[in-house]
Length: 435
Image 1 (cartoon, helix red, strand yellow):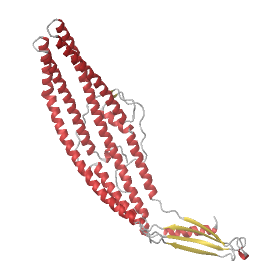
Image 2: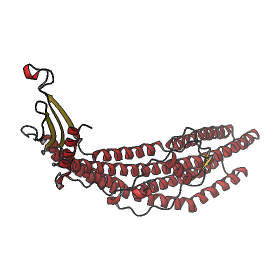
Image 3: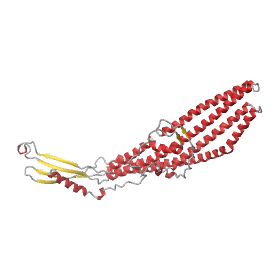
Image 4: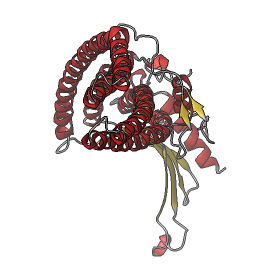
């Protein structure tokens, strides 16, 4: 290394190390939900042939492309935080003067060479402001990852409940089709023996056609439900069967102010505050200092040089960005209040829906379904004995199918409400985020 350059570099390092304490920045990260340093791999391969709700939740966490994208966003924010912590690079200047002229300055006889290093000092707090903003943005991405996990869990529970309802509706449609087919056979026999008018046979045939059409529709709905569930995992081939029920332990009590959505809104408010701090820092002055060495060719002497440059805030003091950042803080505060109000309403509505669904399920599972089943049995016996008409039997069958359908719908409504309350009760620590 040239001696002049080495001397200039050493002097610059001494000057930079003497930067006032106010320009030094605490680089410790802000507290927030932990996040992985390396995103986990995404599971591939087919789903289990028979899928339970617990398996569906585990498969979703391991396979979901939504979670993979959210984890990548966290890592990107972590990289931006690291970048925000770097100081300004020093600048090397080399100046050669008094050459290729005339007289004594012809050629390189009178050349003067200056080597210097300039360093911009962060006295305005730009680095601190950058890091504060980047840390808040990292926390926001971590909460978005937790929200993505909670949303996916809710979607899986709702879609699984829909699949269970479709499965039960398919079973009900199959049973109805079997009963309608048997009733149509009996009606034809009675018509042939003259015990029923031909109109009754036509009515039984129409009921069979309707039951068959309902069965075909239930088969399509059940397949669609399984395929939609698999799509949440990023998988094309759905499981062959959904097993078990859609019930999980009841969700814990929910405090709206502690939900992930409200926490994210509060982080967004911190981001707006950090943006205001950054805008103010950009409006302050950052001087640059320089030190170097000059060599005089004519005498062979060397001399130190020093420089100081300060921008003059004559026109631009970042006034517009500061005003915009202030408005951004007001917007973030209003959005936080809106999110809190909407979350409170959603929790209250889900609780009311859950209570109503549980009451419906209890009533239907108790005497409701048993009475409808017994009424159908008695109507079948009465019809075979010739004591009641075909229309009365069809009414009993319709009442039994309607009661079963209401029970299936009530169970699904209960599962949906539970999924909503569990989603609101989720915390960052419950997501697949490991320290």
